[in-house]
Amino acid sequence: MDHQLILDQFPNITQIQIERFAQLGDLYNFWNQQINVISRKDMENFYLHHVLHSLSIAKIVEFKAFTEIMDAGTGGGFPGIPLAIMFPESKFYLVDSVGKKIKVVNEVAQILGLNNVEAEQLRMEQVDRTFDFIISRAVTSLPDFLRWTSYKFHGKSFNSIPNGILYIKGGDVQKELKEIKKFKKKIYNIPDFFKDEFFETKKVVHIYRS
Image (cartoon, rainbow, N blue to C red; front, top):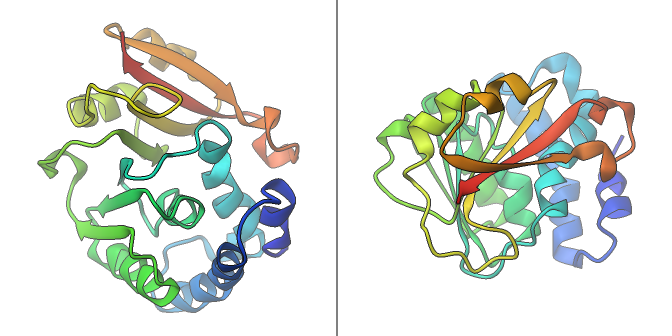
């Protein structure tokens, strides 16, 4: 499975974006053998399970130029790296508490020439900045994630959806959402965008202020 999967879903991307997506597989294959950032058995599904999964956010919002986004608990760079390729005029700040994962993120961003990516080894709650959006891929329960990040997004929005959290998560999220009282919530079902059975129970949860 290769980067053609991305082109099929996003046919209007530029040649440089196509080239960057094409490079991702080999780059992560190389780095994954040095530093295990993705399950080895999952590498054969890299573009489906990691790149396209990350790009589900791009089906919900096209980040405008100068949008500032934090990927909290990015791991090896997901969803931040694929989204940084997709939105080169937006700024991405990727954080993770594991230094070796941030090393991979920085190497990948440098090789691809992603000048819109900054990555640091930090716990998300240590970040002393605010952003338009906080993105993440199921690093913890939603109430815990909200407790650590809900004060880190600006109030004034200029994108097509309100500033807030965009959280990629599988399974039933209703129980966790019931614990969240002070925010508005909207669920986007990823199978509405991507038909592969891998996405059957997967969602993007948008949490934002009233």
